[in-house]
Length: 215
Image 1: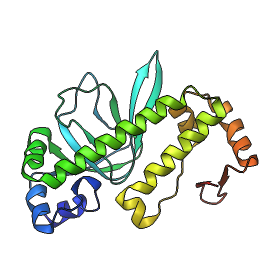
Image 2: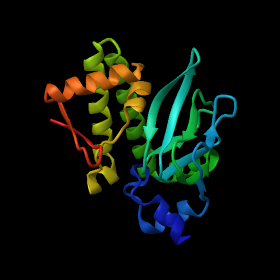
Image 3: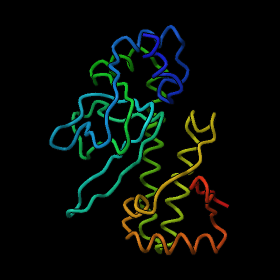
């Protein structure tokens, strides 16, 4: 039980929940380690749980005209799955080994009803995601370099606004391939534009850690 409580700590969704309440919430959570390339759900096999990603990385993506388009890259502290819609229009894939706590959607909705704090946190999270996606869509009409810079700023902001990001100041690390998948640009173009952004003094790259810093 203590391990499950640790899994639910430092999660934005459960911010404001007491230790005693976490014990109640954690008793129905199922934890486990998932290997790289594990698929949690897909449009053909919709989600039936709410997942808390404690460690690792998960991508949410869609297949459009045979091309993978990344909707979101999730890291420690993120929550994903079915929040009561009973449908899934994307695939959730572990891109690194992932330690997960999951709760059946029906039980999660009971938690939301019993704990107003969770309901408010969920509403805030969904509102932030909606704003995030709207900003990403708006950036698609910009020139390629502006679109790439907007995506880097979006990812950096997402890192910093989460609980774990505030505590540990998690730097942004992402490959050119991932940036290409996120923006719809090709990898060669992304590499070229990253060089231009560095020369324009919009970003700098830590050669040792690969972290991207916005200037």
